[in-house]
Image 1 (cartoon, each protein chain N blue to C red):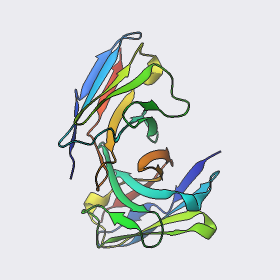
Image 2: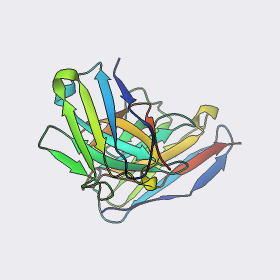
Image 3: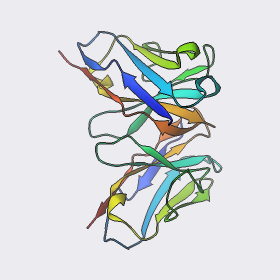
Image 4: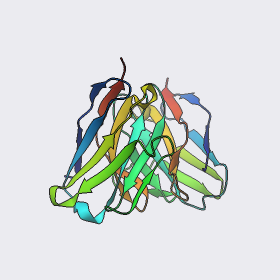
Length: 116
Length: 107
């Protein structure tokens, strides 16, 4: 069964940092691009970042320079390092598999709350 | 950035009726459009890709059409479990973008 399991969410103060992880199973991880997509409370979906490999990455303008995506293909894992967090980063963060740039498999999400 | 506008914002229909959801792109995305379904408290799920192809396991009552800037998701014969928010997503240009969603309510 194809599965994505996020972890690492929590409550953090403005300006703080958090590292999200995503464990993938059931497919050949190193052959797929991967995304992070977020959803603020009561809002729609927002694409955050993409990684095909260590060099082929992309970021939304809203997070560029603050967030860093990475992956460890040996561990079938995707990460999102989030620095300088703001209240507007509060959201559920989904790890999503990418097939031809469509989001075809979604994890259940991990919740990040930025508040003092 | 390509902006996707979905309408209506909310659709309230009875079981068995047909639902027609629209997604309009601010510039042509060819057929590079997907539809996702998100039920309350759940993660989204891919329904349609390449504007008209159903993803694995998606019931035949879901169909997509359109190209360029105007797209439609049709649900023929609504079931109670179709109550959800539906999002369109384009892959034509970076950044990847989503529409604001259409909420389908079953009376």
